[in-house]
Length: 376
Image (tube, rainbow, N blue to C red):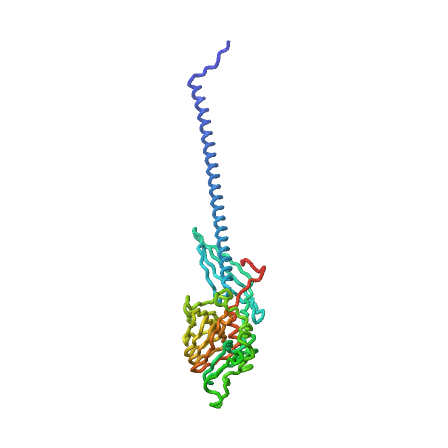
């Protein structure tokens, strides 16, 4: 029988221990590699999640800026008036600036504008996002027919023959496209609606000689016909459904021209009292609306339209370059009294361009269909 090679127990132990150590070391490498792989995957997942989060935040900020821009544009249009300067709207999540850029004068009563709204969203995480939207808007002048330098459906009393009321157009072609083309009556009253007190033939003057135009005094229509021919939505002007006033005296006070009113602005001012007085410091331009009676004192001057619900009384030296209409509350079923040009010198001259600018101030914008765009 052959002999087995001699192998000690210690040698067998060392061999088995070496094999186990090698296997343990290999397993450790595998574990470290696995941990490294898992860490890399975790980091990749984190980076991707963080990137997705930032993309979503950027998208949300951009969407919020878009919503702010579009909301401000709608807010601006809802006001029913084009502003002469940039209008700013503030919201919880941002702010927007809206302005109108004139593009083309379609005719004397309509102008095309590009309306632009720039919306900004301020992200809570920092940074801002901006979106611009725009549309084409046509601005239509308010449809009011002016037929004289002074229109007084209830009638008018003139004290003396001082001053003048002239319906011949004082505007020129250089003032506006229609300048100098409309020669109207100096005064419109119903039959028998004009009374002159003092002056007249006893002083070598003819009653009514202060009024010139085409004709000087027109008394061919009744008061009701005159009111209907004006085409004024008087109730809508008083309650804001037809045109919203830029300044309502009971709420905003009477504006100061040169401070509250921009140099190129022709505002609509509503004196919403039963009677309201103005003087030299209230002089200005635009459309001045008296809900009730009007008292004109001192050296008051006005360019544009004066619309009076009741009667007006003039005391002082006033100059009106545009047109005056009194007795408009007759459209609401009331019976206003006669207006009176009293002591002092009253000079009124029809001015077509001032009237047109005043009407633009109470006109309204209409967005043209299919013109909405986002501006990049």
